[in-house]
Length: 227
Image 1 (cartoon, rainbow, N blue to C red):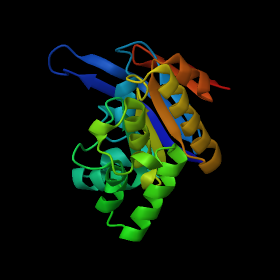
Image 2 (cartoon, helix red, strand yellow):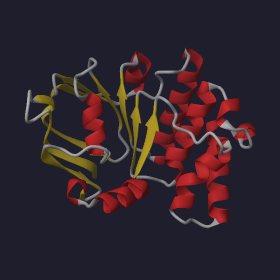
Image 3 (cartoon, rainbow, N blue to C red):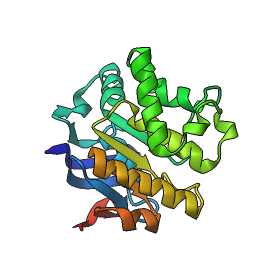
């Protein structure tokens, strides 16, 4: 089953002056349960592609269908709700809320969804245990290492059981040990819970773990390899 169907995507910046096609006619399908790395040099268009797939940016041409919904046809408020309920995001800068504890950060998306307190509590506890960060539950982000912060960010992305996780350079700020540990956890979640992951990355360690590698050069797909 396809979770994502992106068709003839084009993203043009500066259309009225000097047009730059960051993404130039890309079509790609992502199936449920895939563990996919989108790779390419800086400026190749991979982050722009992920932003369009995640509804953070609007295509100049083409369409993105997520779980049967053409997201570029939604209003801004509909899109915000859709992202909240269907897409998990992990960023290289973690983007945790500094005044909240680790557990409160993980619960935050469920709070926005108006999930009841017992569900929020049990889901956060379950994810912290799986991520190996139960002991950090009452600490704020400033009291956590980079690796711990990124595990909290991944747990937060998983909390609402989204259709897929978009991870933009999630290991960029981590040391080797933290990277290996985080990747092992995400690979385990992919295997055991069939969580779909799509990474934008330069990191060879992420690429080595991926089951599918899509290489983008100059806004076009150069290769698409499933292992």
